[in-house]
Amino acid sequence: MWQALHQKLNDKGLTVITVAMDSDPEAARPFIEAAQPVHPSLIDRDHLIAGLFNLVNVPQAIWIDEDGKIVRPPETAGVAEEFRHGLDRKTGAMAPEAAARNEKIRSVYVGAIADWIAQGPASRHVLDPTHARDRVRLPDTDIEEAHVHFRLAQALLRRGRSDEAVTPIETARALHPDSWTIWRQTAAKNERGLATHDAFFARVDAAPAGGVYAPVDMDGMPE
Image (cartoon, rainbow, N blue to C red; front, side, top):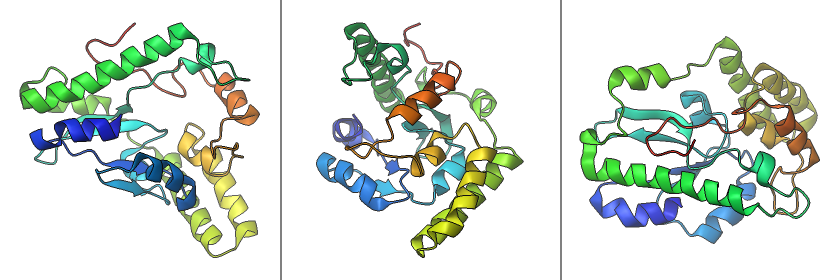
């Protein structure tokens, strides 16, 4: 999605920057190499971007204009929670209705970006400063502290001090329970390197609606 969008709109002024939230760069490498991106594709092993913009999951996106102003704060980017009820957890197959709704959501989101690039500040998807500010979810003290503990844990892990890293990573999880990006880093992975297993689905089932992928308030999004 992001590769195609960058290639389609780069000559019109769009630069896509993708950031993988993986504390182990090798976990992200296969996906980046398979995509062969021509846009900047980074790995944020310490979740500095997550801490700066209060990101809790992937994919989330931030729209930043040519003047460096945020015109759409962090939001779920082109996905929804259709997998909650539309995914066969044994086969990994998505029900046709859920897959169609996911595709509609992705299409609307990509179309909105294209409209922004074409229309600039006049795009109906650009938020004025007041509305943009109203949508910003500022981190509280617990969230800020969670990211400090997370970075400490990563520093310890890189130094081979895995036993000492257990406490700060558990503290980070406890302080910021809404962060899927923190949880995934120490969760077990499946054969594809993804944390989609029984523990993941148990966490999904315990989360409220919108607790995995918050719905996006955007013109054209399906109800």
